[in-house]
Image (tube, rainbow, N blue to C red):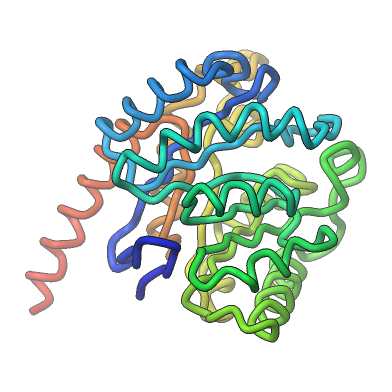
Length: 286
């Protein structure tokens, strides 16, 4: 299986790590750390050294309660970083839901569009359909960032997420987008309770019946803090590396093809251990 993107056919026969580059002052985990073009590019270079296979650049925080960012502000944050990042020699993804930003970054040579709204904003699907090869990640979100955690989903989360993602992907194929360009993201933390997020992890293989690769983003999410709390204290975002790596490994074991993470070096190292175990197991079986 591979993921067709603008410049790359990404081999998904082994798990891939997408390193997060937040060009924002207010992201829940690392807001402000990489908010300038220079610091963001330094971070891109470091993530590449750490073993990232993909860089995912975002200019707007979509944490619970976040307010929408004006178009011109997002363009001003993202475009200078993208202009240089596309020269680094690995697939570049941009995390955006605005069709104007999508078109602008595609014009600069971006490989992947990662959309929390799954191209449901007016004009977004058409941008992807007009492009001959770009990859796209369609994510499930309940409600919107401002309200999603105020009234999370109800009922059995897995079939609801599967239905939405499968229907959205098929609609995009109906516009002429080849299936090999599409990856699905169940949207951990986007309008789900802690229990629902872990239900998605436990039953993640059920999402594979749709026939698309799965990308997951557990990194530093509040659900991890909730279960990792000690003495009544939930670890802040910067102290969630260990549970984040654990969640990434569990997701890969349950069929995820790509994990989107902050802690690239640690995740890559952990996946090497998993790969070594799986290689030995395969040799024993044969």
